Image (cartoon, rainbow, N blue to C red):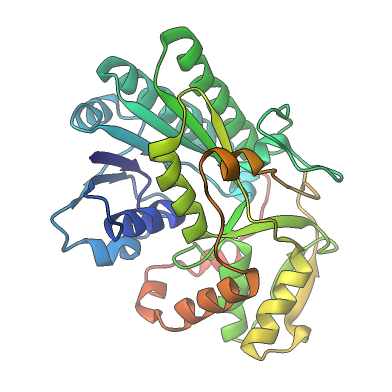
Length: 328
């Protein structure tokens, strides 16, 4: 099977590529990535020597490139997205371009060549939840420009199924953690700053709750959905690890043997959702999937990876450790 992976230099996309190439399936993977913030060429270093892997530098908004690559593929998995909420607050336009216009470009190509698309989305499309966990039927309620752009992309994908009978599937996942994640995100930022004994910023009270999943469990779910997913459907992916931001940072500091005095609470960002949570019962039942990593064990694996991959860190900008949201 020939798979076109978009955004394969990013965190989840690169982990999926490596996971898929090591699986029992004989995939041939083409990876298109524009090398935007969050991408790192070192993420796929292990795949470079594989005859089943090819990298193309390009943007998903480029119709000519996307048409060519989709025509040569059996399936498209769209990981490509501007994904950092803080940056979407500072400047929403790149998120509109990539997450909406880019998806439109891919949809037009899969419509033309009659290929399947798996659109990778997020729990943030449902907004902040007080106590329940969102099923696939929950209404959209995005808070940030990032979340709004992903919700718009989902609607666009659904419209191509209804109007053009395109073969499309949407997956939504909770917060991922694991190797190769950009340090603008909470867990890698905490690990890298703690290593340097620098202050670790936490927004607001630190009580905001996220549901965490180890990235390889997410990749496993996508791989199963690739074969078992039904066209026109959406599938939630979660591991039921709801933890506050402060509790996560404290867990990491404990594992690393660092003092909690490194924690520094800073002004909250606008529209900061309090809690995300997904109900993944449908995926577990219909796709026969279960997460296999316990949260503590996954954290230990993640910390170990960052501590033993100093070369990877050389391709990471220090600005990602210090830049927070700011409006223009």
